[in-house]
Amino acid sequence: MLDNPNRSASVGQASFLVSLGGGLEYQFGTPGEGRTARLGLRAGYMVSALRSDWQLGDSALAGGPDASMQGPFLRLTIGGISDSDDE
Image (cartoon, helix red, strand yellow):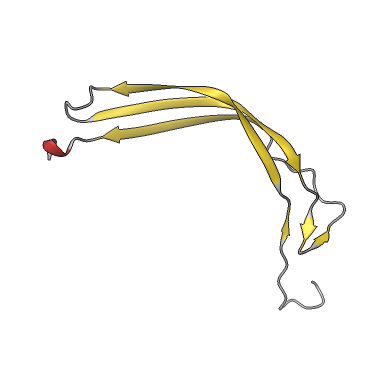
């Protein structure tokens, strides 16, 4: 790749992930009575069930980093709903 800089290369690793967790949501306001808002919180753990070796194009690449999407996560969601009758 360094000898010919006009060439491109693709390096990657494939994974199959499983997400284990739970969450809570709270809705402010009553649906059908104007604008409402929703707040959600999800927490869990992402497990890498299967992971391939690093690849450079179609060839295996040795000595790649031990990178993984595995680990705990926390996700906050914020949303709002506006009835079309209010506008």
